[in-house]
Amino acid sequence: MPSTRQVFSVIAATLATVHAAFGPAFSTGPTASGVYISSSTATLVVPAAPPASSNKGDLSLWVGMGTSAGDLIQSIVESYAGSSWSTYAYTLKETSPTSQEAIYGKGSATAATGSQIKMNYAYSSSTGNYTQTVYLNNAVVSTLSTSDGFAEGWGSAVECAATDCGTVPAHQWINVQIVLSAADPGYINTLGLSSGVKASMTTSDGGKTWNVPSISIPQFTF
View 1 (cartoon, rainbow, N blue to C red):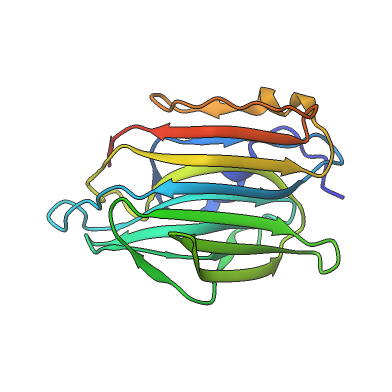
View 2 (cartoon, one colour; view 1 turned 45 degrees about the horizontal axis):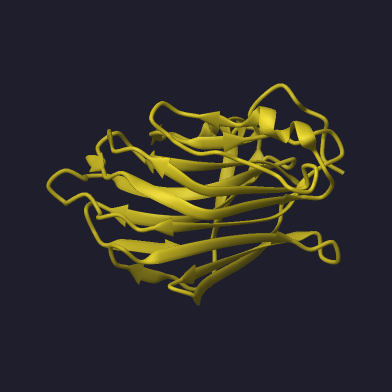
């Protein structure tokens, strides 16, 4: 079962050793003791990529889950130095308290402005793995299965692997659903929204399934 660490944001803790800058975000977690995230899904409506004249770095948009093993399950939508967006499954796996290993999924795809990229994460009790499936306009383009412990937190990110990624347009994640292993009515109290981020989270089954119709992320300049 998940660890009982309850005093920090799981995703923030996982990112503590990552050298990057971050923009506005939606965040939840950690889950209650003995509860973990069994599946989640979210769809990005792809914004325009910042031009090469302003994006000199490695920009990525993602939703991810921090785990009890210190891993970060995070399918990626990436624009490198002003290039077109590309998307792929990805896990940042903890190898020591101060180091991590990047694991890339099978397959990737280029995504145009206005495309919809769905990221689905699901835990299998038979394998102990989380499987990522990335869809571009409803077609599977990348998959990855990794052993990561139990997911305890879920959130979005606007990430620059430096500080020179320019201005990222406002964008939306839609049709977000987070399903827990058991009901956790208090999960709503872990919801955090950065300045300018708009979202609401509700449950109709006592706290096992959480729905977020949309997460609106404002424009942000690195």
